[in-house]
Amino acid sequence: MLTKKGAVVIEPTFDQADAFKDGLAYAIKGEWEGLINAKGAFVVKKAYVVPVETEGAAAK
Image 1 (cartoon, one colour):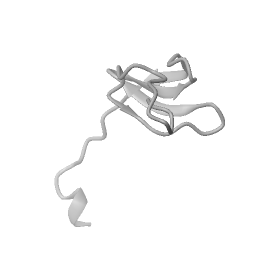
Image 2 (tube, one colour):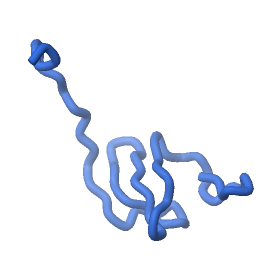
Image 3 (cartoon, helix red, strand yellow):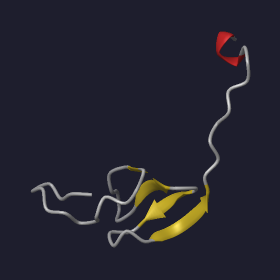
């Protein structure tokens, strides 16, 4: 994650991470997802479950 000036705040170790809001950001790392703080530590964490599409569900 970078600051607006491009300085590295958190090394890029997450698979996905959103922008910070009120000091927290949503992130995915491996099998975990949740909210991280500015130090890159999960403060709310749960197991990540990949959505599974069932056949024909997209046609509805």
